[in-house]
Length: 497
Image (cartoon, rainbow, N blue to C red; front, side, top):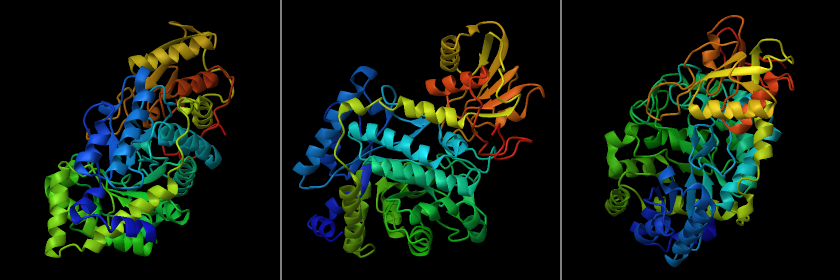
């Protein structure tokens, strides 16, 4: 930390402020990320689908882009790794597609309830991200969901049992760290138990601090103890601590609760500052100053980074924020990146962990009605529901297993809608019926339908997911997963095992 502090202390104040910012960038060109670092002097960038080349050039394009960004960092006089980051939780929140190994959502890890497997899978996908030049991943999700009333997190959460979520998220963070990518645990102090989507509005958490310590805070307490290097804040007002400001802008939450009470010493990263919950109230300038004063180290995606830099520089000049406060955060960033980031694996690592994806899919698939361990379909299946891609993937897996497709047992895929941040609606709640019902997102829709239907929760829509589902439908395997949430009359922990 001393060397990091000495290094960043040489930067002028405006460059110190820019070092705290991770911004978005335009385009897919080989210098796209480098130009942001070179011209705006930011600490790093975040990738979105618009920055990702097509499948044929994804690996070479991203590796080149990241390498150029790191060279720009050094040319800018900053001899430490740039933050090259991405949202890649798996399931509905995954910015990188094929040939990167496709994984199910966080709820699949909770249903499998196998920390060793969670670590192995996360280490594998972490190695793929590192091979692409990524140095930070915004995962895992450590939110404890309240179930169907949760409009934002849903299937991204490992479940509603705080201990299961804690064990799962800690295992995932361990795997990413072992792969040399900085994992960012999210969203402190918890986003799964509020009923407003922070992409569009400002949620308010009304529970007492004692109640939160028994639920939402449990995973974060364990992750702090296990040495998680970074935590992302939530744009949620925590009434028990600060009734005025969202957690991202609250000194009582980020410094008082997270750092002083829980003892967290790592990086505090804001959720995206251009989200409606904070940008509409603060803007890029005032929001950056408020977040830094609250205790944040990394300012993620302010709508106008130049305004954030100008406001922070002015705040230092006026004495509202000390220069030492900026040095503290910049040094913490540099020390974390140097300590965690490992050498880049070969390009061949990308897409090489499909066996791990299948192992997770097999471990997580959950059957809550119908006879366990016995065939649930005839020699043929007729599939409905889901998306066109879902039906295509299901049919391909069925044919590989020797089933005819088009007639026979009716299989209804539930959860056809893709994740839509800001929709204000929980995914996977769409209904339907069939001889067999398969939930592809959250499993809540399985609560409905005919009493005689077999019900399977899959928590994803990857090729491996459908292969694992078909194995259960044909009786080749007994579904080992257990429900990580309540689904109608089926309680958390229900399943064939």
